[in-house]
Image (cartoon, rainbow, N blue to C red; front, side):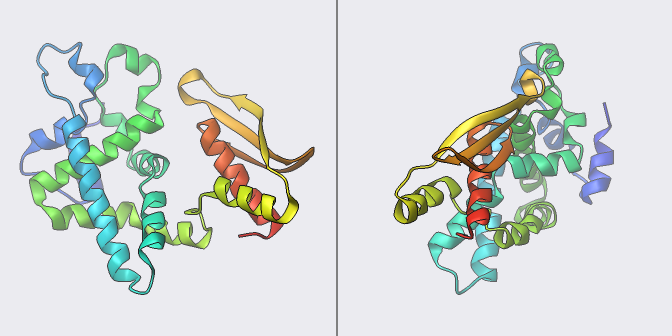
Length: 229
């Protein structure tokens, strides 16, 4: 397992209270097996989630003064999705620092999207507790908010499934349907490919770690395909 000082160097933050940083990487499964560990990172994750929401809200509010509240809400929701937080975790190799139970380790817990996303939030919580809001905000700006431009450019904040159903009914008097085309990968890290159909015609395909996310991806591609974005 990597030493946490490597992570401190990578993110440019040296913790005063090292125990806060250590706790951010204690998964609840580990506590069940470790005699010397009573606390896990879920409370810190809860705090980090709130800090992250505030940082993102503050940024979009100040940066886009002419955008309505609904649009800002959609942008924020798209930005703090689990897959984006897991992407940050993978870039920083946060999984390498996790303390997991043997069972969670064997099931691929170090690369599970939801565990990595939660760990990113716990790390933000730890930074906030040790260094305050400004340092936590700098971390969010550097590693998370950088994804916002692409989200806006690609219109990834749109609820594609709702939008394409509304437009398909309005323009074509039909309701799209989704079929599973492919399923691959181990149980702990499945990848699904879903197809979106207008009656019998396959309009687009989408992939994701769940059927729901794959359907959203397919719907988004279908909107692009039809020129309805």
